[in-house]
Image (cartoon, rainbow, N blue to C red; front, side, top):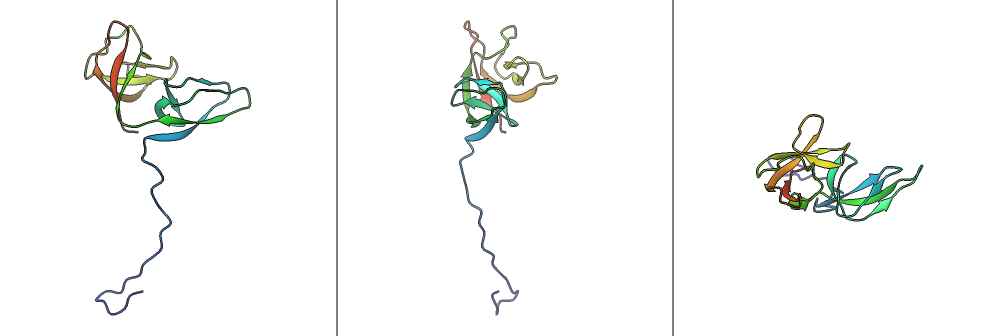
Length: 129
């Protein structure tokens, strides 16, 4: 406590500090799941790109890093029957494990920045988590 000031004040030690830049997060891979590096997944409530591959068996889980940085990404992991024009909001369909233009029952994950090309590849801006 500091005395002699117009209003007495007291300081407290804080044990909180920055632990990362928020560009990736460690998530749990559930049992009976195959994760491929470079593909997109929704795991532990986070959507992003896996930075390593892993396969879990029955009764087994694993930890991996998921890249969640708000940045522009390239992918062919899309519903190929849709247009994916620039500016279109895109969603994650967890059943098909693909990006879609369909909002119903899917999670909003970003917006198209380069439309679908002849190889079914798009660029998109990943939204904040």
